[in-house]
Length: 321
Image (cartoon, rainbow, N blue to C red; front, side, top):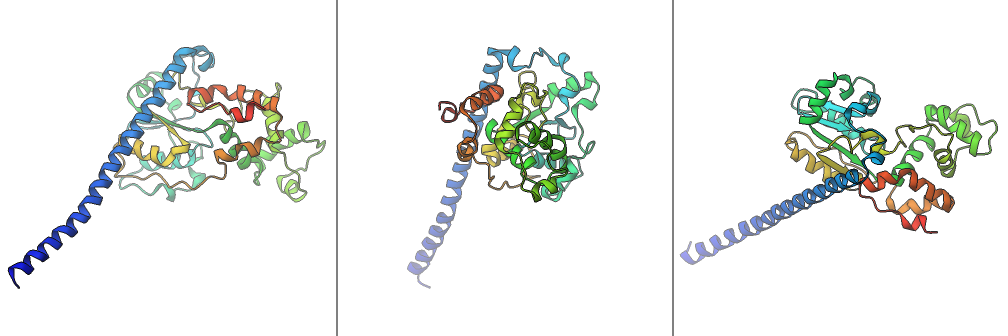
């Protein structure tokens, strides 16, 4: 082989290696920039939360002034992982099943299982996860001070739609017996609703989304609401508990990846992939078409604290007529 040919082959080899290295380098740069953007957004979320809480702590804290004012019931949504020093406040209809799977897996021995291998029903069984309110107060306070605390939130109206679809448009005997039958009697013009959810589906009887909204707006409806439609701030008390990370359902995968990096768990466990949810922000207007304007405005007032605390814009297209 001539020296010229050897030089040509060497140049080709170097060129091919460069072609591999450059995209890899560009990918690394992209990842770094994305991580920095997520970090900056996270700081803005926490800053907004602090500013909102400081502006009207009485209103945003539901009349409570400190941890001393909070009951065990107030703290029942906080899950503890002592192995890694983590506290997670779960909010129903905000990826809480998958986060509970992650918390369950982290309490097992290494190497960790795939969270999706854990049955959804299992993580919702009482006592399968350790709750913060199970500890004595002095220990509870220490964990809140030193552990990394996080929660995930969602557009309040989208979350309401998701709760309605999940609990009332599916065969759910518990929610039919405990909520749907009364709602149908009160607002659905059904003096004697079917006895079971199967009978209701067979006869084509179901409560409408507007019936559900009427129930929420009725002064006779007891508060606090059922957790699937209870205000997020009343589940996790962000003005009394200083969270280290506030994730959003709308950027779930990106936020989950960033959080696991912060926790130094990104090489040990992967957050389950999320599938496109049928309840998209763009479909909200369609769901609210049957809800009168005045009721939309009253509903916003009911969930206004969640909109403001967590940085969700006021849905003017629903409220301005």
